[in-house]
Image 1 (cartoon, rainbow, N blue to C red):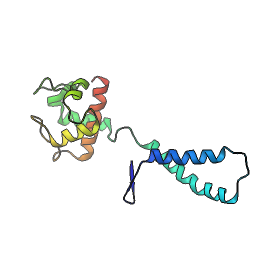
Image 2: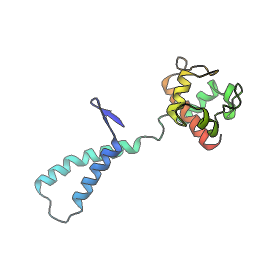
Image 3: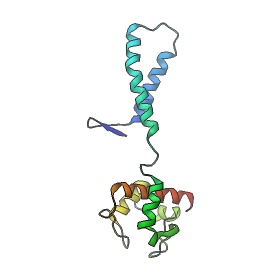
Length: 148
């Protein structure tokens, strides 16, 4: 979802609809009218831009490689290898995240917990940048899903 001129737009849905209209218009063998050709020439760049923008969006917003560095410098003391030295049952393993992470297993849920802290875990919202938190959250989710 992207925001343009204050409006929220679901790019995959919009580009899919535009692409369908464009494909449908080429499905017929009838000669194209000047109006249709003018419309096609105006819609095609929009469809192309939408397809490129939608395909360029990563599954996760953060950079897991950069997140690994943030994790090593800020999280590994308590969470090395996805473990938890303070509360051993609350690891960063997928099963524990499913059970204990508020909001379920998602980058957004990890971002919230890293930013705000919880129980014995301190808040890192004032210590790390938003980008660092996004990156480390992406790293944690990727590692959890991969089994650390």
